[in-house]
Length: 53
Image 1 (cartoon, one colour):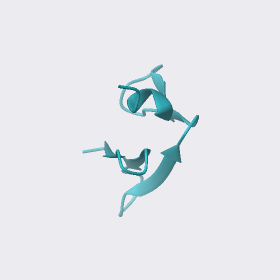
Image 2: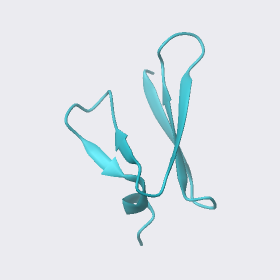
Image 3: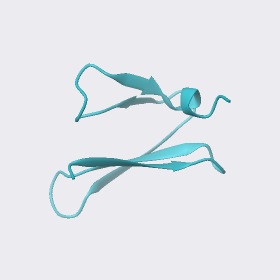
């Protein structure tokens, strides 16, 4: 698996895990940060959008 996300609703943050080299490279994103997927080209999402219900 080259990429996966951990969504933390309590802290309203997303940890983006990318397989770069052993081990995975983790990036924690919050608020107005933009998530850009390496798996889905030309697709972006703002973290806040995930938690709007």
